[in-house]
Image (cartoon, rainbow, N blue to C red; front, side):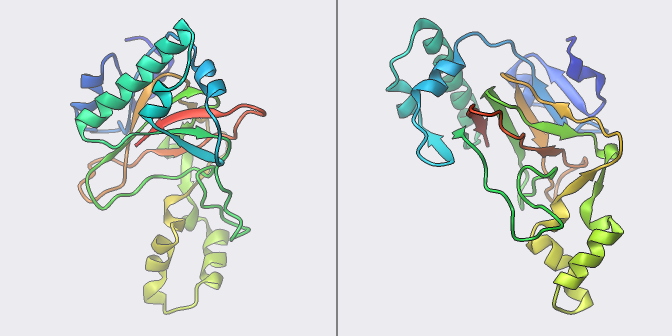
Amino acid sequence: MKNSFSTHSQIAVVSSFADLINTHFQGNENARCWSRNLMGDFKEIVDRLHLKENITEVSCEDLLALQLSEQGQRARETILNDIQLLTDFGASPCLNLVQHYQRDDECDFIATDVYSYHVDRSPIATDTFLCTYHGAASDILPNDQAKQKILIPELREKLKALYDGPESGFDDFLAEYFFDLHYQPKPHAQPINLGNGHIWRLAVDHPMQQVVPCIHRAPIENEDEYRLLLIC
């Protein structure tokens, strides 16, 4: 399949949900994309939904209650089908209407919110799935174009100054507060935007993982535009 994503060695582009889920990550690959050109009016769904908080979870019942045009109904059917596919696979998909995420303002020299490049971690074998139907889409960063923030000398020294405990517990401190999950782009790094409509599967840091986890971040939202995001 020809796709701009396929030029990156860490990304495998597939044409079905079965291909998305049925092969383990291996080698350099740590991201997989079910590339799709979706039909339907996803903006109509966003416009019909009501934002209750900065992030509002949207249920299937909420979707079914919307009065939609033919194109809106088409978009709704796609979302409901995606939710069913992921649920049948054993995942727990969540559809979110996003105005913005909470910013990390506790530490002024190292951010640990989702707008910072980071990897996901789990105590069990799992992957991250996501699809942006409307609005700004997430980015991933090739692993060789990023450096773990805790390995940057000036940041590490500041973290050591923040830590109040024995040297033997410093690494546990970094993990407890998720500092070790975050990455800094190297100069001239080239992020890869995940686009709208595609379902992505990203490698997570877990005990059985055979590849490096996928570095990604949430985008800065477009002004006056909500994101409609399926994630699990």
